Image (cartoon, rainbow, N blue to C red; front, side, top):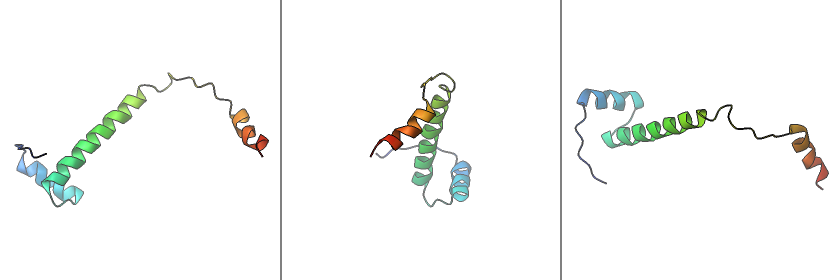
Length: 68
């Protein structure tokens, strides 16, 4: 999709240099992907300590020994 954006040249140039990218599109795509990844990770952190899976590691380890 083609879109027109007004972005600060110094910011785009610094990002291109820092990330070693050759085009503005690469920088914008990278930034969007990174933003989404960070939001997903932050969302997963909300579940820390809230999910009780009741997993018995000894049972899981012995499960494979009983197969075969």
